[in-house]
Length: 148
Image 1 (spheres, rainbow, N blue to C red):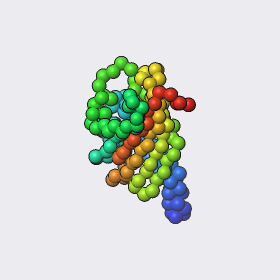
Image 2 (spheres, one colour; image 1 turned 90 degrees about the vertical axis):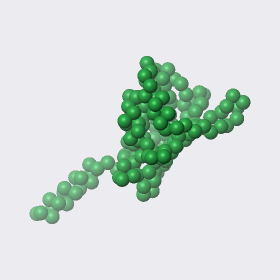
Image 3 (tube, rainbow, N blue to C red; image 1 turned 60 degrees about the vertical axis):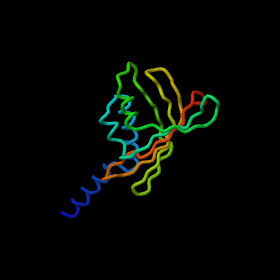
Image 4 (cartoon, rainbow, N blue to C red; image 1 turned 135 degrees about the horizontal axis):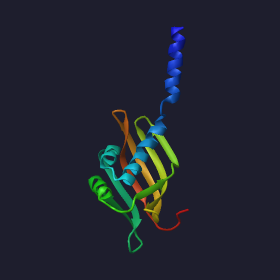
């Protein structure tokens, strides 16, 4: 009887435990919740130490450029008082996990309040540090057309 109770308890815990993929998705979702709420504590918590943020875009001459952004500056910008909510609407296209490394591909549309701003794709690299998934690297694309 005792073994049966232990087995049932373990089955319940396993059935209700968040999967690795769900944990990775939650870490990414927390970034956008932090942006929408201008929550600097939540934003800081999603990034691993030494995290990187880059954007692939076109310059005025139409050439592809890669811009790097400092994580602290990104958090400060996002947290500055602003009338409209920064609302990045993502969908999870691909999530892959190998041990303590995960990659996530999320197409998105970005709105300032209710006004469409731009779209693109985010590519995330996450690491599990001390049992917690954190974003190590983000690179994204940004454009104003072909957003469907």
